[in-house]
Length: 124
Image (cartoon, rainbow, N blue to C red; front, side, top):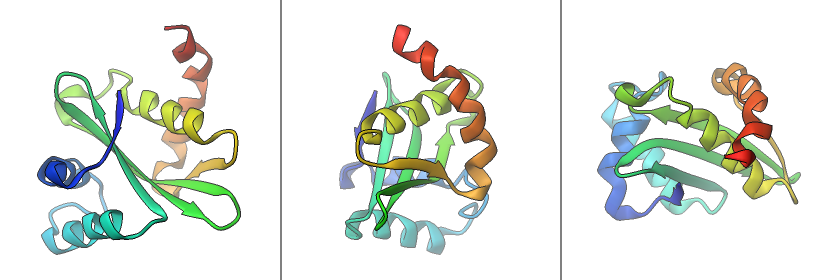
């Protein structure tokens, strides 16, 4: 289930974002990214929670009714289970009525592949 990021989940979110190549191993950059999600009304961070929080997906709202997925991460022990694709699908579903959804360059190829499951996710 996709849940909205809250401050009490900061360490978990930072851990997940640290798997992103542009954030990796740079605490200062991670803190800046989390602060941006907390303070910028156009940035939204969601976490994927089952029993535990297993993934994170961050979006940026653009002025032209465009949503850009800019962060996407799943814990290494839960990769290749479809969690990332489910997160992308949930973002698409949540914003499809008013926004066009796309992804940044690093995430674009995964985003394109995740379109394949959109029809199947609704059936589950």
